[in-house]
Amino acid sequence: MLKLDFNKLPVTPLFGSRYNNFKAVSKDRVIDKDYRLKYALSKSISALMSLTYPLENRRYNKRVAPLSVGDDPVFILGHWRSGTTFLHNVLSKDKQFGYNTTYQTIFSNAMVWGQPFFKSIMQTIMPDRRPTDNLELKPDQPQEEEFAFSNVMPVSFYNFWFFPKQTMEYCDKYLLFNSITPEEKTQFREEFIRLIKTSLYNSGGKRFLSKNPPHTGRVKDLLEIFPNAKFIYLVRNPYTVFESTKDYFSNVIKPLMLQDFSDEELEENILKIYQLMAEAYERDKQLIPVGNLYELRFEDFENDAFNLTNDIYNRLNLGGFEEASGDIKEYIDKKRGHKKNKYAYAASTIDKVNEHWRFALKQWDYDVL
Image (cartoon, rainbow, N blue to C red; front, side, top):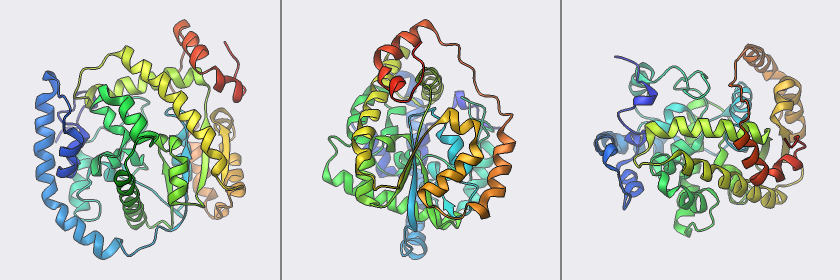
């Protein structure tokens, strides 16, 4: 069986969605002509895969539902392309942590039932590398919860990958939770707790580790569920973030979208969402209990990852650094030679960042170009 080419995917990740969720997410959405076959194939596979959900649900209720959500979770926050993946991977080397995996994001109907079979299929066909930054892809690697959310409930900002024309609607409702209904908020809480329990069960961890950029706009709502949660907030040079996010979103959205969408529209949304997320975070971080928030610049972390990881453990009182330090150091040392994309900032980038994100340049002490 051949590896899939990410740029030519025959289906969207919604193929792994529970079928009732697939219908809810796509209800009243326009599917443009060029994507109708992809949509139909994804829908058919979702219907077929959902036949396993009763078995999944039975096993979950028997083995996983009675479990606790573990110790206070740790949430890694920050805009896309701010270095959150690197920090997530570093901390995941500590065995106290459990986390959502790439496998769980796709196979929502087989998270605790049928894993060996479906995981072997996934390993065989999935691309070896992320197309945006050449990082390795494996089924058991840590992954953002938002991808999993989109396959189990409509309450997910990542529905914008499929329906980009509704991006700002999803942002307002499902990233910032401004116009979310009480029923949707309850569903978010229930499905999130289910995912956390499943992740801890599958990984053997005792504390959930989250890396999910949309959570940056949900601090208040996360604290309602986990009042003593720990938060780590990463920032990165806004010029780099803009260039990198534009590349990342453009590369990822094209194989996933079911609607035509221009690069200009995508860029406009990036500029808006960065500001909205930052405003929400700055407003709501005041609600985080003293001692439960650690803020840092990615450039500083990249230069001294091991020592700053130790500082994160100490400041957030996570415990266990001494036991995990060997695995953490080994991973950091191995990644020192990883080649990141280099960005020569276009004049248009400088103008747009200076106009829309100057507040971030000043707040985090980056030079204004």
